[in-house]
Figure 1: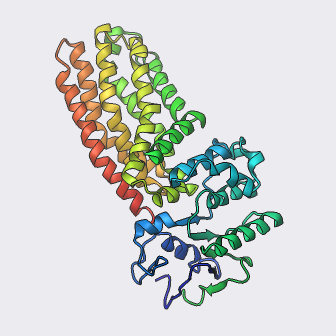
Figure 2 (figure 1 turned 60 degrees about the vertical axis):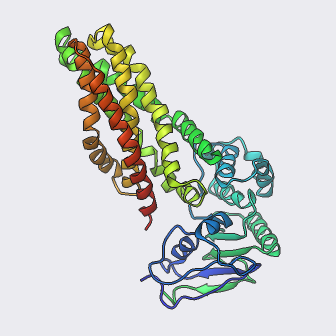
Figure 3 (figure 1 turned 90 degrees about the horizontal axis):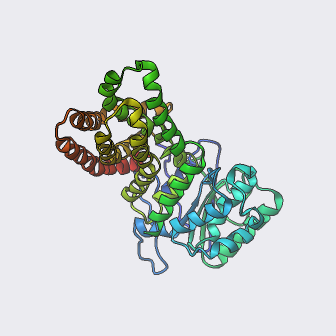
Length: 189
Length: 221
């Protein structure tokens, strides 16, 4: 059993930061929330604004999950990668350019993934958040490899998302969204 | 449909660009056919009788080469998570991947085979059967191969497991494919073997698609 006595709820416009030592289940919990793992015991429910419970399919279409891995292919350019992500998400392709500008990777658009630094690859992964408006953001160690300016940008983008009624659940070893509620997982694992 | 097309085109681009996949399989196929006369000797009768088996073994191994790149990279870099959370059913994800693999491997082999088969003294009248047998059988190889790739994804030394899963399941294609070429070389009607090859690919399409999608679903659980 990974979790015992774990209970929390997060409202629209709020954020929850999962903290805890390595192996405490932060990523596992995020993957359960994303629907990529199934909890064998317990209950996980998502509610829409009118308090109606949403289905798993609707949840999948309502969430962005940015995991450890950056979903960048070495032989695809940044622009091709984001266009592919837009197509898979069902997002408008015209938002690729604005997403690249938001994350300051527009000048890297024609570079293949193989030539990107770890921080640049991370920015490409985070740019997915800007491709389509989805109310739930699930972020696994979002600060990894990011420099100070991009961290500030991430905080701004997250603040805008929450101000618009979005919800964020993030796992982080570093201080992230200081005004957000925290859930320490080591105590439950 | 948009997500399906995007995935199909991306996989084709990756296969053509990455320096592996497509060209590696095609090169491997041609190399085996070209090396056979050096290993077996220049005797036309011997090469002609070995040709059906050699052509199909070469095709089988050549399609196997690119299979590790069908699922594993997407699992490792998180793209599979993106696909699992998308509106595209996993069965269609598998279909797009099979199609991309076949277009960049199987189809290339179908085109190359009639061109290189004369090195094995295959009769000119049998060349259409060489192409037809591969055209009917290689889709099945891609379907079964993709199912094997899905099952072995994330497993250490998955390539070995992949070969162990895929090769025995492809034995019917080897028998019917070589049988069709053999039949026409001996003046018999190859249609029965070709129809059985088509049946093999159709059964593989249904069973392997469902199996691959189930394997991808269970991959994490």
